[in-house]
Length: 275
Image (cartoon, rainbow, N blue to C red; front, side, top):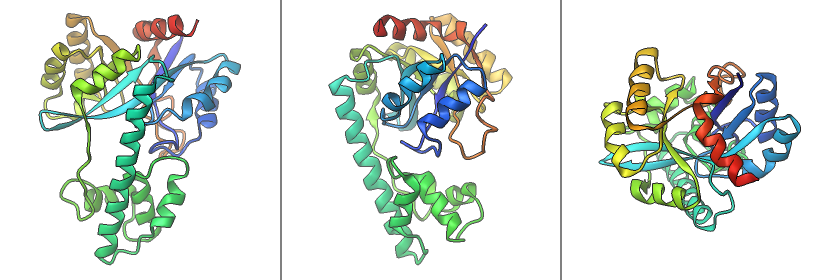
């Protein structure tokens, strides 16, 4: 049986690995299918597609979307859509522009507090990705303001922190509609990270969500079985992935291997489109 990882990030959003490095690691870990799910960004797909094919790996188009629903920040994973869909690409570009401006305001707030953080250095750290909180956190560590990235988030970059700026998000119905019209499927990411994730999932089902991520480093065995049962009850796709960003070296990559049979509907949707 083959394995997949459908939740990976690169430096095109808040990861630190290049698309080429992600493909290389996927091959080293024996993965047959992967999806790069950068936040609001599809730039990794054309870069990695040929490299993946050369390694015998199927690369499924993916993206992670920040959604607002009932006052909660919810993340949706979208898969197997047409990566050239104009409406989807335009919406993602607008999201990236918003994310960039939010990052700039965060840096401005921290500098107003006398914290020695340089916007030019933050931009260097984000490379080809959109400026975001992980890049600001790394700059704070470099400046000696904090010792770790976690400390940067806890003290400055989370709700209630001195540098926190609320994020603009897509409405749930709009996101599902855009992905569906682009031919794709949606899955609720890391469901245990929301207040009462089971309730959140059950509420999203009648709104058109297609799946739920039951295999993830933050989804423990008991929760995994609970979400698996809900998925089976409602005919949802069970998805999964390591959510690797590269910050922990190679340790996170390969920590979650999803049996291909579990995500076959996503694979079939993409292979049917790609033929």
